[in-house]
Image (tube, rainbow over all chains, first blue to last red):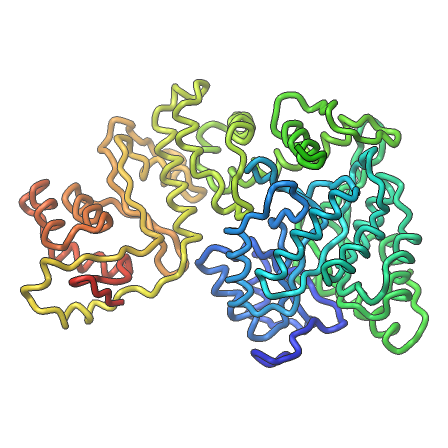
Length: 290
Length: 262
């Protein structure tokens, strides 16, 4: 447990779980031995019982705020009202980490409720860099930026995704949140090479890893993986995770589960598996997932 | 216009508009038609926002059935997409939309049921403010009481309907007696909705009490609000109404001569 306002507010290089509303009461009552918790920032920007519960939880666990609404990749300017709401939440929760996405969701004033894909161009890199700079200055925090799960690629993309992220980190000082399930989903959907991707990301900029389950859907007779966070982490994703740990060393790792949410103990079981691999890598052992 | 802005505007049109083909966007097929790839995003946006509206408007959904609700939600989302990433703010204009939506004109009470459900959702997410301690009023001299104005808790909403929306709402809860009949020509509803501790509740107010609450919420002084209520019904009892407001934790501060106490 961290001190209330300790100087070194950092996520431990251990396994955490994404905390969703149906599990809040159980976490408050049982205080399960999980190293840290991550919540979606937007769910706590109103008042009421949810925010009060988070006040109690953050007293006992390091908390990571994972934003989904900043739309850092939008060609329009940032929503400063939203940025200020995030700043107020950060001041209240004092999170160990604040993360967002390599994506956009706002166009012409409409919020499209999806992490939408960016053409990977010099223009997008300039837009993302400007917005990450602006957000970090306004929030007074370094951001972690997550790689997307992709269902399409643009013909005019010119920058490979890991190069885009590494350059974004170089320009803005942000870190990278490497979602290993997203790498696998993008491999299956648009042919991204996850092994080369991991090799292209400088280990020093990777500050967090996400793991989650995905669904397999049919689109016109073509198998498409949907990043629905609705099942256990797939074996292929555990194998990629082991590879990521070999390259990056022990990195704080989150189990995310959003749809078909099972009991808290199922998430804790997945976190225990991640923790087992993290401990092995911390001891300098070779890791290899089943 | 920048290339990125053009791509995003075309993407937005493909997700919300009636033409999902999006020929203006340069998408690589990679073995699957670009429109099919775009449809994955379109499906997610439509489905998650429809589910969200269903969660906010469960009684409206029950009254029209889930399939019709999904159709109405689809039209609403296309015409009025969210404008804020905080989705608990989304759906505030759904009642106004239903009022103008020709396919449900035969259910004239539906928009007011939606207004009640929106007020409940809004109350759930309203900011936490400490309720006013009634003992603080004891420090105000009798002559000054008339001139007090109050700040009402942000979870409080006051709504009226010519339909018995409170009884319609109760009859459509899971634990309601399935044989309940709600007479649509029954008494109109004057309701106060608010969050009490962690629960969102509502209750019917008399016409005079409703006028009193509304006058206070509009920032009228206590004496003026009492006179407005008495004009509605001479039997209006100020002490009882004030006691109820404190019991409901509906007040958070009062102001006397521009000085606020809370």
